[in-house]
Amino acid sequence: VMTLIDDAIGAYAIDRRRVLVVGYSMGGRGTWYMASRHQDVFTAAIPMAASTRDLSIDQLGRQPTYIIHSRADEVVPFGPAERNARDLKKLGRDVQFEAVDDLTHFDMASYVDALRVAGRWVANRWKD
Image 1 (cartoon, rainbow, N blue to C red):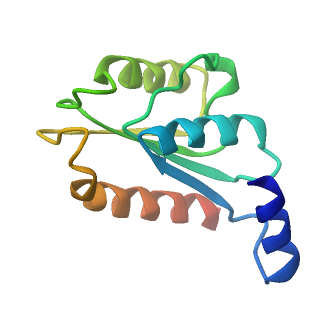
Image 2: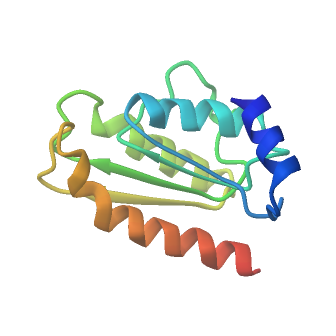
């Protein structure tokens, strides 16, 4: 993945200050992973319905991070996502947590409105 990103950055006019990693479910877990390992590349992250798995809190949220999770998620528990967001804020990280209601884990398309809000939030961070 990083080779593809490097190739894209080399081939296209990409603003290195505005590179977003985003994913849902397992892709959201990958978002946490990639953001924690490649802080020099990704300047914002949007993990949705995602576990952080074995990543420690100090590795997370080092760039603006907008976390989206449903209280009704039956696959990835809501509590740890909410707790991570709270703990990251306590560390002074630029993190926003959006809890959505009544969306099951398999209602992926219903996350679009929350993703739009997250995209605007990230865009506002990039303006600064």
